Image 1 (spheres, rainbow, N blue to C red):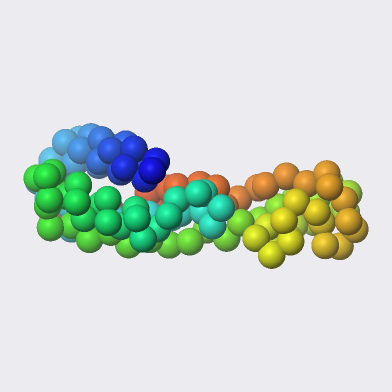
Image 2 (cartoon, rainbow, N blue to C red):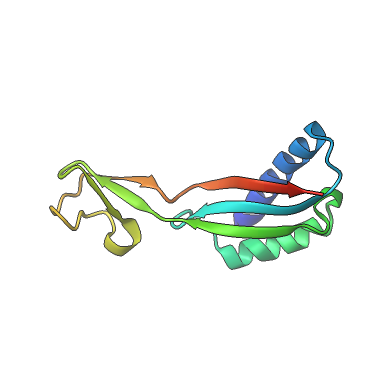
Length: 114
């Protein structure tokens, strides 16, 4: 249930951004969420809807989520591959010397203000 904690941190960031830019209402927030971030997007959206009703600058805002694909780097053959499909073992060379390079992020992409 770390989704609520992420929402609270997100709201603090949005508050600070709104204050710094003299924004009274945020209409839309686009958030990029990694495919293997562990964030349950349905629950995350529910948390957002609950929280925004108690937060004036976000009251009528809309949350849009975009998925960042998970990619893994293989040291063995020096290529990338789809993490979710193949896991930690490289499908090309069978190496286990692999490293996640994207897909566990949670990034604010865009804020639309009124």
